[in-house]
Length: 254
Image (cartoon, rainbow, N blue to C red; front, side, top):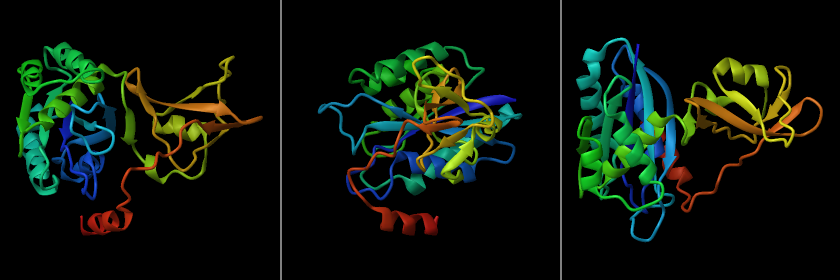
């Protein structure tokens, strides 16, 4: 089996009905037969007035696994078609694709790290990704910067949060630590003395679990709430624009 990393950044507009995260999550259904989605990771990039962004300047990377390396060209073509179909008008989409077997991954990782603290250029992105697939799909092609950064940061295994992972979005308000472990999510205590959550302990999800990517695996931070009970330390952040009704219409059509 081989891991494939597909980085997307559609640099959506202020009037967009959805952002890069949803666009990437939707790509799961377009993966070629034999590909399994292992998760989608959101990566936070540098925020400053010199960089055009909609709300948070983020990109996303889909991690997939395949036993057939010869399907790589097929998944790249499908990803490009997906961007053509779902990228918002007026956006500048970019796509980056790499595998765990590729050489020179360190160049992408270093570029990803730099994009979290400074303004980057398309030329720098192309240089960092010259051994990989990197393509623009409209507008100024500025999305290649975020797409390359998303792959580099995700490949590093120490950045970002999962916005898709198994049945993550359908978990109840309370879930056993053992169930999260079964899914592959490690629950880590934020208590000063680092008491370990027990398998039969309960985690209050706050209706929003987005584990961090740490050590190449999803890790959930929780705080103790009494005997046998823990609470997810994060809450869902309100977005700048509320297009919920319109998004539901788009999702239904999708």
